[in-house]
Image 1: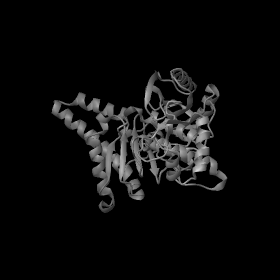
Image 2: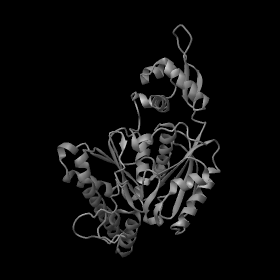
Image 3: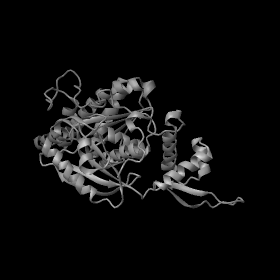
Image 4: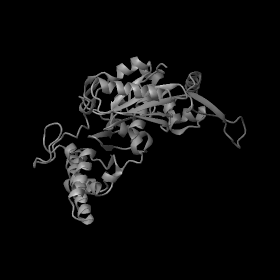
Length: 391
């Protein structure tokens, strides 16, 4: 299917437009404003939309006619009112008209894909073992999984969203993803050519923070740390996702923590955050400590120390960011059995000891409630933004 009057993508604009804009973009942006209002609230009359958006009733009626012609908006009957006169007809996004395909390429051993509704609900999911594939073989695995997921769609496909590890630019080129053996991989363009569908590719941590914004209720400044095979962060400031001039904002995994060297990282440096915090490193350290412990109590203490030290290192990395941006909420995404407990407690303690208490006293750190689907849902947000201008 073709793009539906696609507005600027999420990287270039506030996530939720709420005001009228300059004349040269007025119709497209007013259309986006109407769709965004319906997407977030639903069940609005034409008069409601005019009041909510500040547009004239004539403009709203004209836009609704256009959107109904594209099957994007539907009428859902009349409002039950006790006032005299004709009851208002209620409108909503046609939430069953399209589906979204999402892929999560961030897993160490397995790629994941899903068909999602426009509201971000996972309707069906699939997976494919990576089996050590790298380079072109890894691309072939992605293309194979994408074809499988597309075949499971039961409605027209709005677009494809992909969360990839590594540095991803605005054109969907994966500039560097060591775990997949990719450098300058034009993933977005290649998959668009293969499928004929609109495709959007974004870094996996950036996808995760978009999911937290759109489906997790985070309407404020937010830092999300995603812990998996590597470690990355997504950042929302002033309603905008921050990607960086070279598309590497949030690439904290290979920042060296402290001056005491620390464990050797796969990148060749010692003491990178990833070497302290990634799931494979934590899992291996816990396994070794458990095997070496003389008693269950010794094993428990050793595990506590490993997780606490990892949390302390994360707090050291995040403290300057929290202080510079005055952030009051941090979200962790990853295995809760590793992150939710000693690790998160040590992170908070370190943050508070290294920042001004008067400015960060209300700081909260929490686990995401979206579980392992967070990247899939965030990739869907990219599609919603690119194709409809909503999030």
